[in-house]
Each structure stands twice: as C-alpha cells, then as structure tokens.
Picture (spheres, helix red, strand yellow):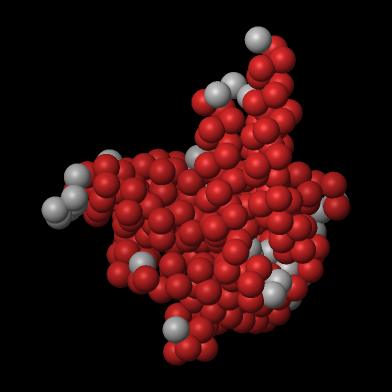
Length: 333
C-alpha cells in the first residue's frame, strides 16, 4: 500500500512539476525585483499557473499523497495568492498614505459630528465657568482631586501663579507627562467606545471634560490670572482638547449609525460607520501623545505667556489646515 502511494505521488509530481517550477521562477522574480521584472508572457501566465497549482494542491490533499508534496504546494500557493490578491504596498507607503490622505479625509468626512462635539464641550465649559464664578463650591463638584493638585478656590493668587510657571525637575515632568497622556487617552477612548449607546455616554463625557475645563479657568480668572492660565492651557490644549473633540466625533458618528441605521441592520450600520471612525481614532492617539509631550515638558519649560500662546495658536492653525484645508489628493482622484 505504501509503495502504491509513493508511486502515485511520483507520477502526480512528474506530470505537474514543470508548471510548479514555472510558477516558482515567476514568484522568485517578483519577490526579488518586483512585477516590472516579468515579461508579458509571464504576467499572463501567473494567474493560470496559480489556479493550476491550487488544483494540484486540492487533488494532493484529497488523495492523501506525500506530505512533502502537500507542504510544498501549500507554500507555493500561499506565496502566489499574496502576490495576486494581497497588498503590494510597502510599510512606508502605508504610513505616508495614512498621514497624507486617510486620516485627514476621515476627519473631514466627520466635520458635522466634530462641530457637535466641539459645541458640547464649549457649552459645558461656559456653563461651568459661570457657575464656579458665582459659587466656588461648584468647583469641587466638577473637578476631581487628582487633577486639581492644589489649584482650588481656596488657594491664593501667589500659589496659583506659581503652579503656572513652576518648571519642576525633569523626572517629575516625565512622570507627569505619562499620567496626563494616560488620563486624556482614557477620556478619548471612552468617548469613542461608548458612542454605540446612541451617543449619550459620549455626549456626557464631552460635557464632563468641558465642566473640568471651565471650572479650572474660573478659579484662575477670579484671581486675575485669566490671561496667564489661557497660555498655560493653550500650549497643549490646542492639540489635546481638539483630539478629545475628534474622538467624541468618532463616537457620535457610530452612535448616529446605531440610532438611525436606515435600511441596514444596526450591526451592519455600526460596522460601516466604524471604518472612518477607527481611522480618526488612530490619529487621535498620535495627537494625544504629542499633547502629552507638550503638557509635560513644553508647558512647564516654556514660561513666557506670549510664546505659549504662539505655540498653541500656531499648533491649532496647523491642525485646522491639515484636516480641513484643500488637498491635492482629492483633486486628482
């Protein structure tokens, strides 16, 4: 019996081996020098040889031929499949495409949700500012102790001023930057991830973030430090708050798809909406990392108010142009 199987395997290979070898030569040429190295005849032959080899693999498995032949054919067909149907884009090209096209286009496509996200944040910020200015006790309702770090209505103007310009030590700044990156990432991720619940948790998180921001500004404004705290915030907030707003927009986009699926099922609608939202969130993580560096290092090491405003407003301008400015890629597509 073993001899019969061996004989079958030998005959099977002898009858088909030439086409396998031809396919392997073509694959090696592509893997070594790219598709441009092939002749016209080889390009035409490639799909035919792939189908033929795939058929051989199917027969080999069905008839339990030599395991070595099966493994060889599996490897050969997998390589051919990748060449024919797999992505031929290099890692560098993928990264450049993400930054030059995919990310900004995803942000631009969700501009309505971004406007709503920004409006919710601004509304909560103004409301908290008014409430805390009129009654400082509201500050303790909005602001977690872990974030206040001694900056409370009870602090003196001198103490509050010192927190705006104290540069600290390098190790402390590194720890602070890591903490803030972690915190802001959690807010952004939750704002995105909870959007499926008909947008409600996302809207609450956006307003919660606005309440913190407004109450924080209010206590400094009460001590005539409004301009100074604005510079302290904007150097990183232009990126950080914008990132959280974009994460909220991604969550609202998915929530809207779940709430109003149209002719699709809710799952199908959410899955479709998740494509653009996920691209946007990938960029949000990058923005938050950059904001964490600015918050933990640049904001504390740069103590000139005008320079802080210049960096913050300049960064915001760059982001706006990047996301919403005219793009050469769009006109060419």
